Amino acid sequence: MSDDAGDPESYRNHKRWFPKHPEIGPAGVDAEPFYSKEQYDLEVRKLWPHVWLMVGRAEELPAVGDYFVKQIPTTQMAVIVVRGRDGVIRAFHNVCPHRGSQICWEAKGSAAAFTCPYHAFTFNLEGKLTFVPDEANFYDLDKSKTGMIPVVCDLWEGFVFVHLDPKPAETLKEFLGEVGDSLAHYPFHERTRYYEYTAVIECNWKVLISGFLEAYHARALHARSVNRISSKDNPYAHNDFIRMFDKHRVISLFSNPAMTPTRLGKIAYAHFEASLRDEAAAEAAEAEPTDAEAVFRRINKSYLIHNIFPNFQLNLVRGNWFRHQFWPIAPDRVMWEVRIYYAKPRNASQRFFQDYSRFTSRDNLMEDVEASERSQPALNSGVLKRWILQDEEVVIQHFNKVVHDYTHGQTPATAAD
Image 1 (cartoon, one colour):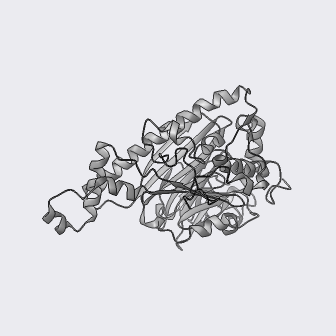
Image 2: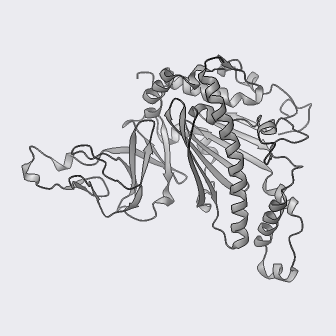
């Protein structure tokens, strides 16, 4: 993106985005959907059963029989994801067809078969019912038709997705569209070590997501921690570029080129750079790397955000990647899951850098949480009728329009629902 103010695409200009996207309407979003019980019920019924949902990574299931159970709190469903004997990853509802008990009581593990703890109905890894205690005492029981209840499952770039509708209106590839194509062959598999934060946040899920769809807040909200986004040249963190697709969004943010790390940060970045150099050369030099601040600027030079509808966000940052998921559990509560992925550290210096990086990220995230939780009571009051959006918040409008389209029957998946 150009920094020439004469270029209409330049970040130095104003009102670049809404005029390009008249289909999303004039700037502003109704406030009621952020607290309405009626809207939440519409989402439960008309949105979540009709979208592809990311539930994990393929490398979480390295061996035959490895499984995990993913709760889908909005729908009160739970899904078992398992690698079968043929190596295929499948998904099943965590419901025994006998009397509805959960088949798996552990969150993850490895099994040769699944045995329901209640009455010992046993299923193989492909979901087929193989053993029923006292089978002769059942009436017309056909084991071939009484297996685990399958859930539609597919993989994209190592991410495991499920669809709760047995006959989805779109394949996963069709659902992801251009945003999926843009990330094809990204080396997610090279960053498999992660740190995880999970919390229930006291706000509507759309309120929390909206805070991650703009950088306009960075100058004010993150001024007391680490403001990597706004700068003297770009004080209000205008985006490098924005791409809005049918359901999804991509945002590119500039970094603050003048920002310098803290004293501890300088140590972390210095050791990180040293750890990447040839060990023999580093020992011969017996010195810190040339310029820790230069290393900091190189690693933090840009941020790329892929917001995949409805609740999955991938942030490509500092040579690593973040994964956010937002699971509604009530009109004013959301389960927020964050994973920060790194390459496996080769030495103590890299481990120290990763710890420093994740803790500074955590501090920023806590500021985002506080802002969202302080917004919810004000929204609940009903005093505010409409969010006033500025141009760099255009993605918030696009996201909420897609939610509206699903809940009001304006997508092929929900038109007849």
